[in-house]
Image (tube, rainbow, N blue to C red; front, side):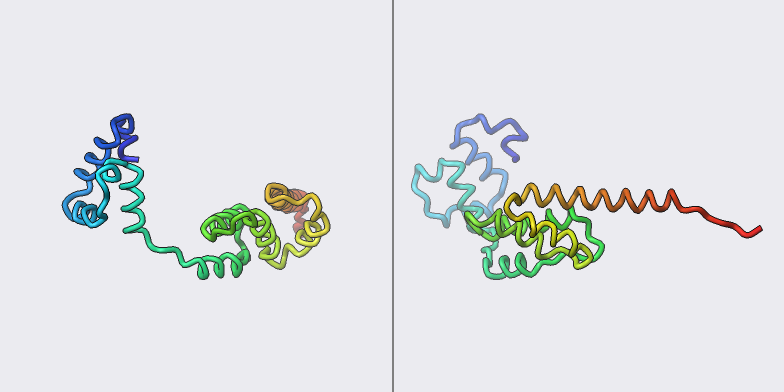
Length: 163
């Protein structure tokens, strides 16, 4: 981001590496030297960034990430949009491979709050046309429809005051 923000991404890779090393300081240069890169590798910005990422990024605990994904349920007042986002982002971290979309879709449906059992039943009945996109659109539409109906009911309420 820094290189792009300062219009340095057009520079040679070797210059980009040198700019990065200058920017990150002495402690990180010591870390860089511990990578034991070849001359060619030390001039590749991608290789250098990958090495720093591997060094500093915490290792993923796939078992825990997958547990969190499969255990996640919609909170009682959590909007669908927030719930979808949490499930989809969680699924992306789990390395689910080719099953990611199917498992994400199934998790969204199975984790719905119990007050949406009617929607869950309808979605399961339409399994043949269900895609992740279809499920999210269906639930968003259902949520906005429920909100509209609630508003209509409030608007149609007649208050009777004693005389």
